[in-house]
Length: 162
Ligand code: SF4
Ligand code: SF4
Image (cartoon, rainbow, N blue to C red):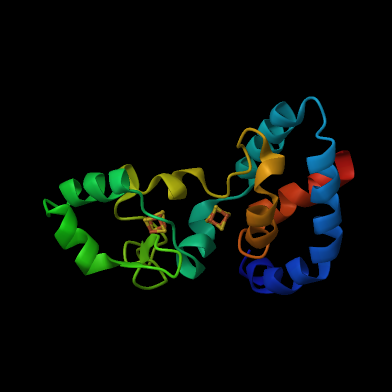
C-alpha cells in the first residue's frame, strides 16, 4: 500500500489530462444511473482498501471545519469552541477553518483518529466518491486522486466502465 501511496502524486499527474477530459464529458452528459454506479464502485473499493493501512488524507491534507464541527469537537474536549479554534485551527486564504498543521493533530501513530466519533463532516465524507451528482465535484476529485488510493482506483474503474 505505501508504495502505491508514494507513487500517487506522479500517477495522478500523468493521468491529469485524461481525467480532466473524462470529467468534462461526464459533466456535459452524465449517465442516467451515475449515482447508483458510484455507490457500487465506492463500496467495492472500500471493501478492498483499509483506511487504517493508509491515512494519507489525514497525513497530507486536512478537512475544512464547519461551525457545527467546531462545536461538536470542542464539546468532546470540554472546551469552549473559541478555545478549540485558537488551539487547533486557523483561517486559510479563503477564510475557511482548517488545521494549523498536517499530519492532523488528532491522528495517532497507529493511524486511528482520536476524535473518530465526532470527526469533521468532511472527514466522514472523504473522498466523496459515493456522493450524489458526483460529476459536480470533478475539480476536487482531480485533486483527490493524487492523495487517496481509493479515489484513484475508483476513477480508473469509472473510465473503464462509463
Ligand atoms: S480515504 Fe483514501 S486517503 Fe484517506 S485513508 Fe482512506 S484510502 Fe487513504
Ligand atoms: S480529524 Fe481524524 S479523520 Fe479527520 S483528518 Fe484528523 S485524524 Fe483524520
